[in-house]
Image (cartoon, rainbow, N blue to C red; front, side):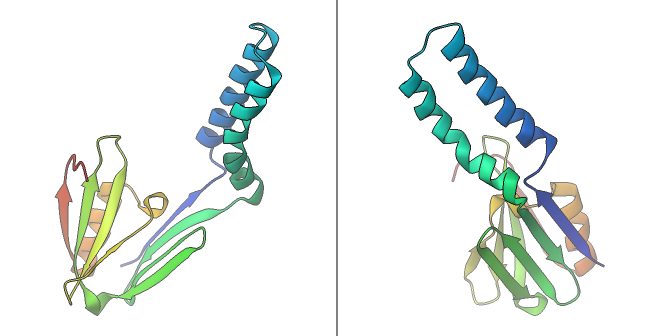
Amino acid sequence: MRLDYASPARSPRAVLGLVSAWAILAGGWLWLDAETWIVAGLGLFTLPLLWELITGKVARLVLDDTGLTWQSGTSTGHIALTRIDHLRLDRRFDGSLRLSVQLDDGSRQRLPPDCVPPGPKLEEAATRAGLRLERHPFSPF
C-alpha cells in the first residue's frame, strides 16, 4: 500500500498558459498599440510562473505504512498513520480539490492544494491504508 503522487510545475499546461499570456500581451502591444508600461506591468504577473518553470519545483504527497508526507514549495510535513482519524476531500466551486487531515486529537491539518492527487487515486490509497475518506462536493469554504 503506497501512494506516491508528484505534481511538477513543468507541465505542458503551465507552459501553454505562460506562452499564451505572453502572446496576448505582445499582441496588445504590437497591434493594439497598448502602452509599454501597461504591458510590462501585466507581464509582471507571469514572473512567478516563469520562476517555477525555471526551478522545476515539484509538489509531492506520499501515503504509505508509516503515514502521510507532503512537500509543496517551502511547506513540508509528516503525520503518522496512527494519528489520522479521517481524511476530508472538498471540491471547490472552481473545480480544485482541498484535502484536510482530521487528527485524533480533534485538530485539522490542511494540505497545500498543489500536492493533492486526483480523488479516485486518493480514495483507493486511503481505503488500502484503512483510513476513512469523506468526500464533500462543492464546498464554498
